[in-house]
Image (cartoon, rainbow, N blue to C red; front, side, top):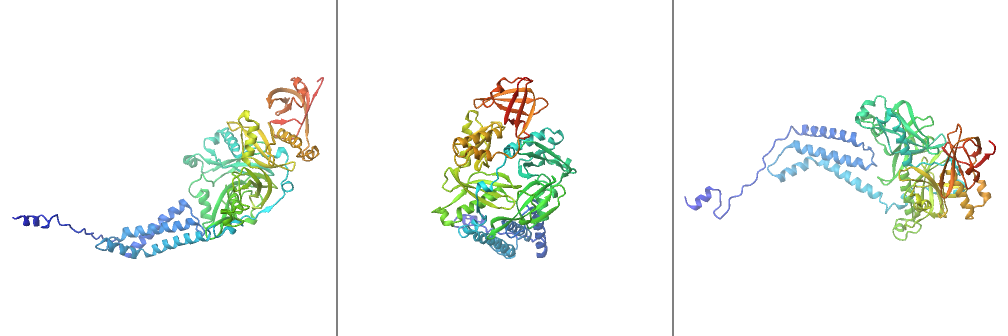
Length: 579
């Protein structure tokens, strides 16, 4: 055999390499007929969609972006199923792709429509074109601080921040052996007004799935209520346990129960509150979009869910019961004011001239007033200076908003000033409350040690933040603050007297059972406990020198303002000689 014949036998061309063989796609038979494939694909898509909806709980609302993502995902699942079931129907990949496109035209059109709605709907809410609409989300009223913000007595001032309240709640739960092994305190405590007093509420969660399994019949048996004035912690036990909460599973999961009850509503924050009878409720704020299709988030109402029974009822925003304190979240309030502050003179002004452009400071706090809870935050220039030009108070139930012009220190400058006044102790200040003290806007804050325990209190004048008063009790702090206001000629003695608390001082008399002493800011303070009493009365040696020679068994009379605190600031002290 010659070379030519050998190459021919070996499958090679006479000119060189082996002859290339064309790759042929072997046809694969489709799974069933066209109707069967469509029905099977729809069945798989429905099963997938049901599982996805059960887990992710998207609102079936045209203003919800997640709905369109859900539709696109369902179309993709359907298309994949059709591709897998139809088999290869042509001899080449090109022909196969053409056949696939023809049979998947409907899901492809739905995907394109959903994507187009997402893009066009977002453009209609683009802030460049709708800056004025964004700035009008929160109508703002200008008010007078001294006349509109009530002055409260020192024994009504909330003393606890969220971290301190959570620590107290965890400590209290740790004392109850029947609860601590099964449940844990949720850190999302909420400040509300309860029977005219500011309190914080903590709900309990199951520790894990097995603890839920063992206790699901009875539910969560209690919640924690903390009085923010007295720091008293109470575990409120319920006759019937809470059956609906974030730590429940399956149909009793809080958000799942809400979604299946109201499939079209969009929810914002869901808050834990109690009514005037102490019955626990979940307050779910209902969102509406006021700008374009997806933007301009606002609240149009609330769903109230009984945490024990799961019964729900929807209320429009103007009809929400007055015992409810939180419908508008603090974050939404801050967001809406920032829109107002930046864009009320137009978008381009916010970018270039920035005339009269303002924004909220970093952080906020809550004020109890008129049996409602108001969000407080400072207002500063967008240029980022270290001063406030004013502050706002916004009602969390009605969104009634007031702006008060008051140039002064922003909150973190005031916190630094308070920490500097007691720098020898290395205390850290909490984010301040804004109080009306003798018609003066005043920052009030607690000073905590490294362990998070409250050790002292501070008051800082907003307009002159070098005026800082500290004290071991609120009464002592306020007394020193009044003295500084007089010393700096901000107020007269007569004006200070007019702003004293309305509560009448009470007197106690008895024999001294125990005496302790401590040096505070260079002054010796005596802590005096009377027989059959629990409180320690704080008497300064600077104000009452006769306290230095006081002995156990001596008779004394002490005047003070009513309080449930263990440490009580004495307003007057008298030692009875000869007893």
